[in-house]
Length: 433
Image 1 (cartoon, rainbow, N blue to C red):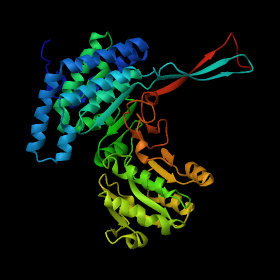
Image 2 (image 1 turned 30 degrees about the vertical axis):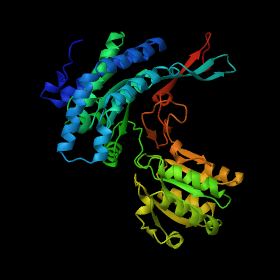
Image 3 (image 1 turned 135 degrees about the vertical axis):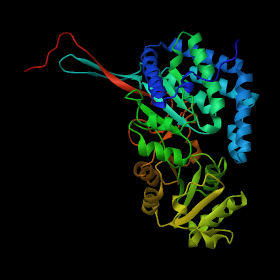
Image 4 (image 1 turned 30 degrees about the horizontal axis):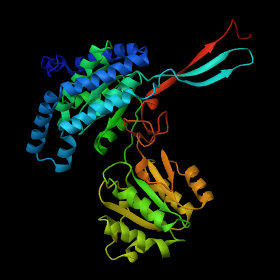
């Protein structure tokens, strides 16, 4: 198998605007073909893509080693370098994930509703692809394969823009994916990666590429997401922060509260579904606050609290107004006592980010109110906030978590990467004058 030339012809062009416009036109043409691809054709293509990623493994790992070396030379943190680094096991996991996406049910063509009108018209609501999805991401090179495969499964074309740290790795993975598409008889342009680190390319994508991009998905830090949400001329699926709360209601079982809280905060502190604030009801603070705060501290979590939380343990440091609005993504949590369910909901509405929030209680009425009144993409009752994940919902892989209120909300998997259209069937009906 010949070695891939990772320097795209587009990358050699002088005019970035011309480059990006051409990428958009190719993606739009590919999206029209992908929308008509059969479920079998897409699944075969995804299996072939997985094999191409495996066969191109040495080249992908070689390019990744260059990215890692550059990141170390630039003095990046060990955490970033770990997210960036691929080895044979991680690369195998990337290929396996692509195959698993191929094994998911086809989301395109589903009948979402059927209505028979009194005049005999039959109206169907049918799931169809979104079209062209722009994905702008940082850090993890596996997002190249995950995002591309999810878009393909839903019959879309994808334009991918990797962060500068993972640029070489992402280019190599994307080329393997395009190769797999072509080998399967589907358009190679259904997966394109922006072949430049120039940040102006992001701006071009946010403009919509003259109507060629239908939706943007950012995957990265606050700076990237803020820019995308502030500048995008097309719809965006994204969340800015994951300020997730665990509220311990007055009727909470202490053992359950402790177990769920520790999992919500400490299972993985750096993910968007990790709890960042603990709210304890005044009705159970006398019995629950000390054990919960102690459990967090003993697990290695720093606690920043209000006066009541500080009185529970001398290791608790004062919380500032900023703490209630902070996504720590670390072993740190803010804690306060609230005076009942209404106060808890008010706190979440004031400081939360509409991502994931949990109530722990044996009171069914209180749980029902919390689930109804907390306006977050995901609300849980007696369950960890770390279930905020597409795999845990049974959706398979996800392209991200959406906290907006339009179209997709929560984990964005293959079903959320479709929209719908109406098919109207008649036998000569006309509308009366």
